[in-house]
Image (cartoon, rainbow, N blue to C red; front, side, top):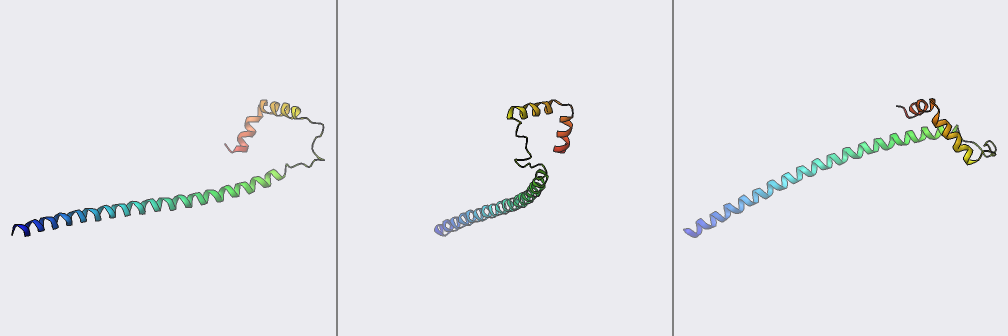
Length: 106
């Protein structure tokens, strides 16, 4: 009789351990589902951001195209130091910050 009781106690203990293991698996699966949903959401957001960046790049390319100069139109007598001086004077002008803010969209 004592052996039967011991076997029953062992079976009960094994069933409890098995139940705990199943519960841990359920929790892990729920966590993996949550992580998967987060990854999908992030991927969709990244795809949208990528499309927006592509649209902006195309728009910027068309805007820059208006300012492209050929070698014949450039100022061959202008040296790099002259260009640096002009850029410095432009940066010092009071309207530079306003133009920069409008360009950036601030």
